[in-house]
Image (cartoon, rainbow, N blue to C red; front, side, top):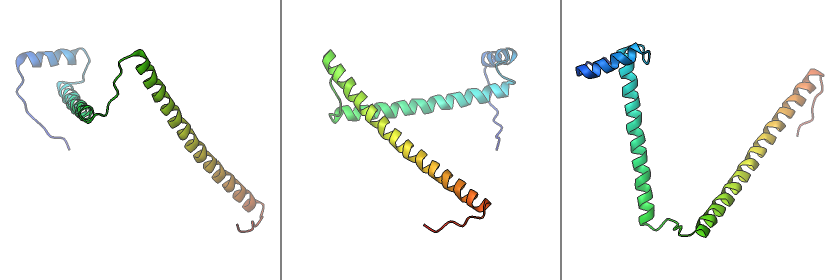
Length: 127
């Protein structure tokens, strides 16, 4: 549903919009304003997301859930722990993907065998 909204614009803003339309950045002043409103709404949503992340980080710090990095060795140890966890996560994902692919392949093989048996009039024994 489209809603028509009439908004008085200052002359300088209307001129700026007209310049953007004339430059081909929008098909019309209406399209320009729709895109501007959409971008502004997205920006506000992103700001809210960042605020939520910042609040969560502050709560974690206040609860003592943080790692203090004071030396190069601390940074290297954190890097190694992070990489080890990432490798473990990737390995687990690869295993899940491999099982899924094997299952799909088995299903395809079974369909091919069943279709072939039907084609040649072979009756398979029940399993």
